[in-house]
Image 1 (cartoon, helix red, strand yellow):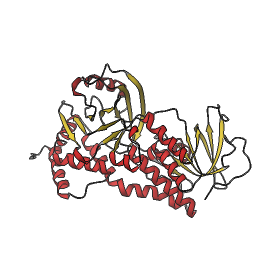
Image 2 (tube, rainbow, N blue to C red; image 1 turned 135 degrees about the vertical axis):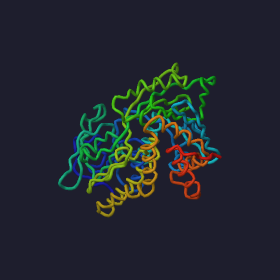
Image 3 (tube, one colour; image 1 turned 90 degrees about the vertical axis):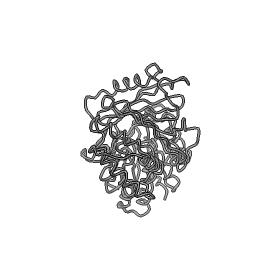
Image 4 (cartoon, rainbow, N blue to C red; image 1 turned 135 degrees about the horizontal axis):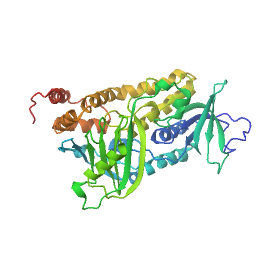
Length: 416
């Protein structure tokens, strides 16, 4: 079904654009760009709205399977991580090698997001650079969006009409703020990182360009973790926390100093909230659907979001397409339903893990010690790379459960 062409509107940025889009997608990150591209492939007229002036703070980790599933070209993968090093408050280090089952692709959001937006535009989505300011839910069932632009190529304020709207505009979603109750905002941690120039080959303190360091230390983060993620010529160093008053910038400075990276040139600094719990409802029951960070689809414990955002973009596009085809607003619910069926249990387990093990340094120390177990490492990487709980070895899950209890309560646990 194509968009309806009505009389000319002087506030349109381009006279060739349809007067009424099938779908407006607000937010051009991985979620919104994938949603726009998929809707165009389904034959819908799509407007993608994004300010294009911000880089989201992000470690940039994507499983190799995700890169393949979403056809991400190799040139966007700035590094490949083949393992991780877990660092406890005491300084104890546990190496977790992935082996031959895959790798973690590292991307730089400064290039990754614009590529996805351009891909959506090349597929046929119309693109508007601007910031959403208002939404009117019209009596005829359509939505009218007011978008502020820089005024260079179109009017300073542009009015856009659409039958449906996907809000993929991040944790501080304007779509959610304007059209959903304030109580719907998911809980979050605030993340801050600094992109620095990677050290030379003679790196201090055994810095490895193909290994991610994850730091569990209350001095860096009292309730989350810190990280050093190599991105080829650059490296992301940062931390997250929901504790008010915790100085993330100072913690990142301390982390850089401890990692021997204090003298590396800082390229840019970024900060943003990370929602850690999917909202109970993503749609308004009529014509609006939230997606990605706006809907809270960032994994607890790890803070991983790119894979889930891209998947969420696909699912929300399919749900909106079904709603337009059938005229039934109930079709919008299928996005959350499908997502939670596939990943709800993983999110629940990760949430419990964060609540239990991240509470204090004593427990963080035990958590890192538990990561030395071969069963834990194998199941962790298989689940992460395949984005589902591993079912083929239930006995290993049972063993890990009892080892988990042993670490938590200080019971003797026999290691391999």
